[in-house]
Length: 228
Image 1 (cartoon, one colour):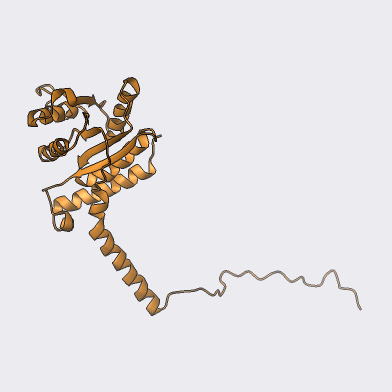
Image 2 (cartoon, helix red, strand yellow):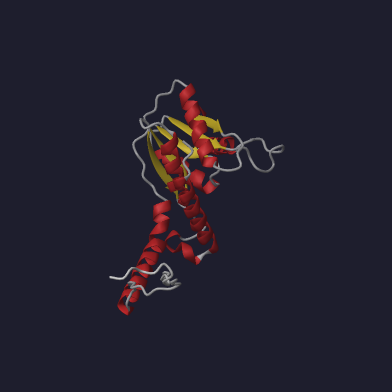
């Protein structure tokens, strides 16, 4: 066999910018099934999101923690809960008031809630005010930390508490308190009912839409932003 000449033309690889490739794609039936499934999930979410956020799951407890920023309507419901139960102590939490600080008799929402509950009939010796430092964000977390710090420096021995909060805020508050408090303290939650919108048709009012959307976003934020 004759030897190849060193001057013989060399073959260079071809440069290709595109190539044919097989890929899977949905058929018409597949797209229809996907659309129907998405609609079903959307309808399920819309009709069940409020009950998920406004969770009520109380436990047998000697202590009730009331978030101080609640409306008078919600505090009235908290008083009803206190009246029908046998709580030994009632804690109110809250940050400094955001307006009228220098004019108001009470300087934070914890004091306002305690004074309101006292006016409604809760004995003063049962009430404990837990003032929360002024923070720009993560206020519920700051209140939970302040409550835990009080427990850590007191002689009180509690193994379970119920948290009383407002409507769709309940799921987030429950999550935060369970994370902040040690595992040996069990936490239940009670959500106050709202009259600002119809919970079963929250999408029919601007107040309901604002509440559900904002609380859903805030819950997701709390879920994935654990401070430790």
